Image (cartoon, rainbow, N blue to C red; front, side, top):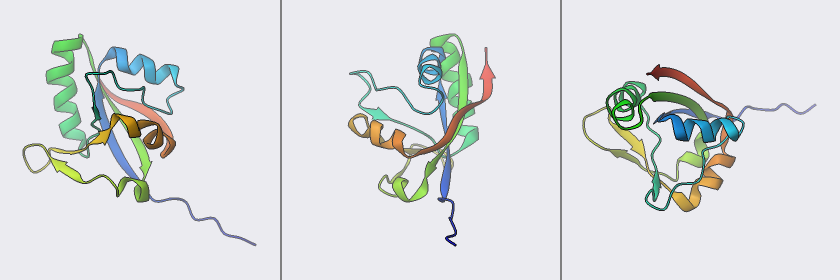
Length: 119
């Protein structure tokens, strides 16, 4: 009898606007859409409060609404991306090059879920 050990995962958050969220919906809540040419990096964040601030203060202003998504990614895979401190102690991001997003998506475990909405 073989025992299966679940993969260790890391919880990430992504603040997003309505257009990107619609593309995530079209992908079955399992992947992030390809980056646009002016978006060379995909930035998931490691702190929910930081994601809330971006969605509420930036996405609402620029996109008319802001959403915070939460998702799990295989922790071993994530170790290739150093944590970047973009400001204060809790302002932590991962910088995933756009050309690696398909591989990143292959390591998303479960569904991407919306956890906060700011109209």
